[in-house]
Image 1 (cartoon, rainbow, N blue to C red):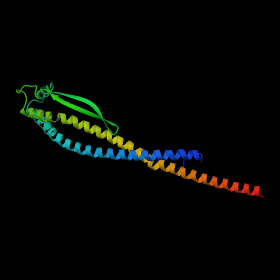
Image 2: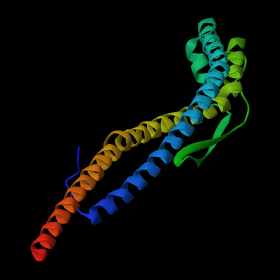
Image 3: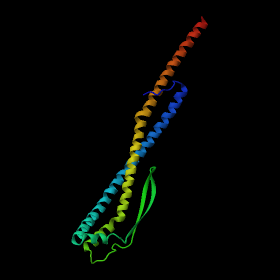
Image 4: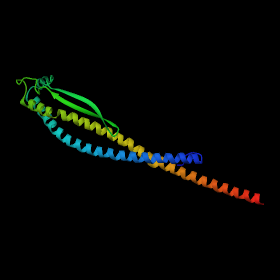
Length: 205
C-alpha cells in the first residue's frame, strides 16, 4: 500500500533513507531471530536431559513415601517430615541472552536429611528423602532453564512479528511509494521540458 506523502524530491530522499534503515533493521532482526532459535534448540535438549535425570528419582521418592505411609501410621510419617533439618538456599540473579533478561539460580543445600527418630517411621521414608535430597538442586536449575526457555520463546514471537512487519508491510510500502514518486517526478520533468520547448518556439517565432 502506497504511503500518503507528497511526490517531491525531499520526500524521495527521506523514503530512501527510511528504506535503507528498514532493510538494515530487517537483517539485524533476522540474525537475532536465528540466534534465538539456536539458543532455544540447545536449551530444549538440556531441559529434556535434565527432566529425565530429575523425574525418575522423584518418582522413586514419591513411591517410597507412599509405601512408608502405608507401612506405618501415616500421621507419624507426616509428623516426622514436618520439621526438616535440611535447608535449601537459592541465590538469584540475572544474565542477558540477546537482550533477554534471563534468571540465574545458585542453589545450596545444607543440613541433614533426617530430623526424626527411627522408632515410629519406616526405612522407606529414609530412602524417599534420600532420593528427593539428591535432586533438589537439579530441580532448581531445571526451573531456571525452563523459565529462560519461556522468556526466549516470548522474545522470538516479538522478534518474528517485527521481522514480518518490516518484510511484508514497511519495506514493500516504502518501495512502492518510492517507485510512485520517481514516476511522478519523471512525468513532471517531461512536462517541464515540453513547456520549455514550447516557450523556445514562441520566442523564436
